Image (cartoon, rainbow, N blue to C red; front, side, top):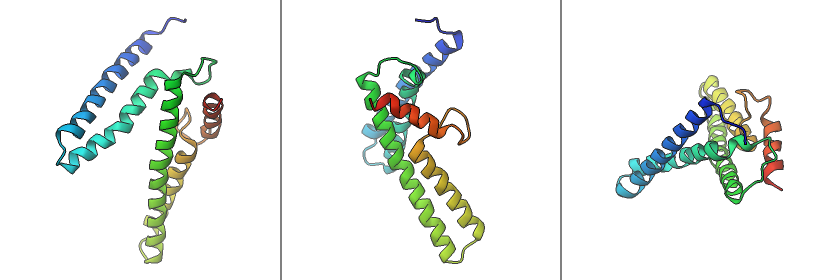
Length: 152
């Protein structure tokens, strides 16, 4: 196994600390504050963030390699894939319906356009996820690479 660079070791320790802290905070918000919907919602929002941290920690750097896919990696991938599709698909649907409603009710055209653009972006990310760069250029290629890796 190749020696890790210093920044990779630091990054790994940051993800471990962050992941454990976020998991504990989510559990605390969900268990200790049963009658407080705002805190429960905060705990629910921390769950996918915690999930992402552990994904980055254990599995993201394996993409593009021939490393064997383990059971936990496959489960995390499927959970993230369907969670992303459900949440962002719902956001895209709500924004699209909002854009239609604003347009039909004669609201500001800029608001309808902004909601439509946000719906399109959320739908794109729901379907293909994000790539390695902050543009849409490599999203489909990275999506296909992930599908090849995990759908074997």
